[in-house]
Length: 309
Length: 309
Image (cartoon, rainbow over all chains, first blue to last red; front, side, top):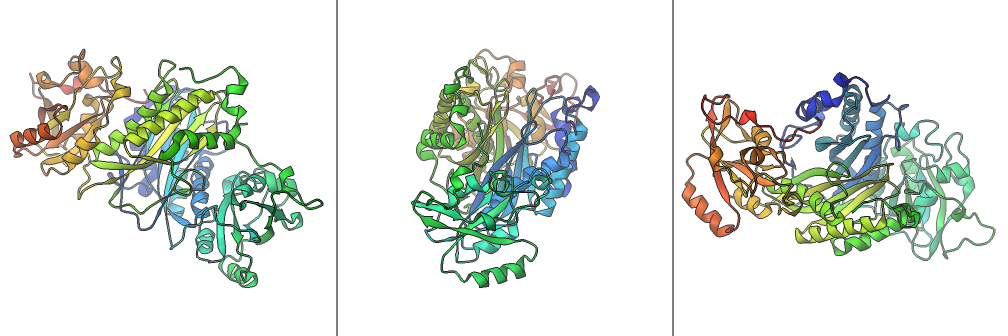
């Protein structure tokens, strides 16, 4: 859906800020608590956190992350789910979000209504309160930046740091060809899986795969090591080859390091009971040495999505 | 300073995302804790909050909130201070911030370095940790959206709700002509004043003045009442007349409702001891009736800054 309208009466500028904010509160419905716990005061107020707090921020920008072919509901769902995937990667649970919207005065109210209603549906599904935000005007821009707050659900927050030489590398779901099949809009963030993994002692480090495994895996690799992958084991999405699985990005799956001595059969069996429909695949291990030995599969020949290039 | 460069070697695109993030961590220095408590993991991790949490988000956009005449340091300082003013308005203290930056690939690294160094100086001054963010590319855009987390410092968070008929209306500092004199970049957010006021039982409701008192005061006005102001008492900044004081906006002062029976002389005396350099002015009271009586000063003839118009 094209976000701009040629009819001034249908544009957000015909309403102005105050009327627009009232409309937004209506579109969000019960996912937007009353002020000061939601929209309408200088700050939103949240109860003291139970555990450690998690904060992440990600945007969607017209012309960059979405175009006229995408419904505004899908845009909003993706915006929230991209951020949820980051909370999942730490093993946390989401709590609340604020949304900063930058928009051209010609953006249509219909587009905006579908966007906020889509946000409300996704927020309700994942128990996220939309507690505040900001509206700003800028010519030729339609961008939404969502800051998501979460908290840890157990004694441990999983980070990208902690993998050691010899650790197995596991990935959830399937990789590659996220865009052609619409996975990048339809994916389910791995929140339950992330929390489950954070409670397993053998899981040492974790992150989500968003820019492609070839790029993202660097952040998980212990110093003095390299990821020794078996390309035949890569769980490829339908239509994806090795290159696609490693470089396409937007998979929103979890990749984690498992301590070498873990009882892998027990882990796999427990995983299958907990998540019977989600594949869990060991794709290799972290090996000592920063260079791939001759003859082995060389991950450095693949590049994930590099921003600002 | 113009943010774009014509020399590809000086542009952010010459670095790419990873190198840029490393540079940003360097520019931020010690206001950016190490991951996972700062930049570098899927989420930033914060210790459990002590009191109730406060969240606010505000942007600065090139062409809208700043232009080539403004130094990038001032842009960054204003971005953080706009948000700090919202925390001040609730009587809270700031804790940490995340920054979502949307930028054209032609933005110069020099501009960006000054921006982040300016952010670091202001963050250090107000004890705010910069714990994470996002970089996204979009043609022709330079916008920064900052989400600030704070917490309450006492048993009470002051909101916009709670004023009653008869309550006095007080404002800190001076109003109007914020832009000509550079106040909108140089202002000091009223954090200490906000915390002090939140501990006074007679203060019933508070907010900051950002869009002009004529507009903002509506949000503080109790149902069935109107603000009865004495225009002669308005604390005008040098060069400002009544209209400027009521409508210019960007004052970043506090306006609050004080219970009618409060010992005002004692409050004023205590204020002068605590904040000898900051004026505190009673500008009127909330009177019953939604319309201004004939002959009285009519605030509805003045309009503050209306966004998206």
